[in-house]
Length: 328
Ligand SMILES: CC(C)(COP(=O)(O)OP(=O)(O)OC[C@H]1O[C@@H](n2cnc3c(N)ncnc32)[C@H](O)[C@@H]1OP(=O)(O)O)[C@@H](O)C(=O)NCCC(=O)NCCS
Image (cartoon, rainbow, N blue to C red; front, side, top):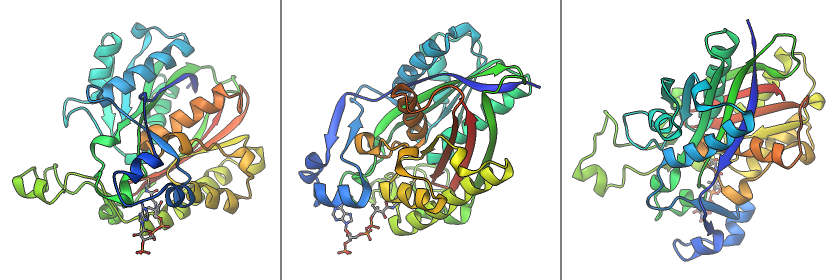
């Protein structure tokens, strides 16, 4: 058995910025409403020629450079996304090719906004079992392609971006590494946050297109309540399982969906703002990319350093949720 550590991280966001004021010209909304209800001020939008694999490859290049890991040293590529370039092949295969990674396994996983934590748990299991030495884990999304730009209740929330981590093998004696994961899901909530058509249940037809069923649909109020409860419970249970007091955690890195969700969780755990990473004002909700982007920025800003205990917590469509504890 080995320990699995994050040996390098990277992130990429497209250049185009879409502000709340820009949205005022597109739907019946205003900066004040969006800011007070969500905390979001602006988000990034991919250019027409950029697909999810392009964002993913840019973030991954940076993560591999930081880790000092060459393409031929990557054993597996896992991409978490709900906006793959195609239904198949997997976006991970396209990323592998773009990065010149020879012969690695490639797979996409889909757990919506919790996807990155699910992917990290798999990478950690591969590495700690001794099966692989270096696994490239990416959360990448071009949500601008599945957002209904005529629906003010959803289009104000989402953005495009990618974050990546190289998960590498280290010895059990090393203090750095993943401590544990706690993952959950409940499919009875499937139709509260989803894209109804385009899959095997409702394949694309003139009718599904004219009914706008290929866009994301969400019941915001119901989603909000379950998100707060399940994220807080996931964090509480992982801390309890590992006999860790919340005060020992240097930084909580939550999924960046809504500042009010994040504040409610922090309050429930009795953790002050200074120990909670927030960057959603700049990027909005980028689904599976929020956590790696937030952790990457936290490291770059010096908010956490080697030896610090970090707790990540996510929530997404499915519903899915999860928490992870990591000593950097
Ligand atoms: C979407 C969300 C921001 C809405 O905030 P809210 O406080 O619940 O607001 P409501 O949906 O109750 O809407 C309140 C009013 O604002 C209106 N409204 C909705 N979107 C608006 C917008 N963009 N601009 C202005 N007004 C808007 C509503 O129509 C409603 O008007 P009414 O009272 O006249 O009916 C919030 O529910 C949320 O963040 N939910 C979780 C979403 C999420 O995180 N999803 C992803 C999870 S991974």
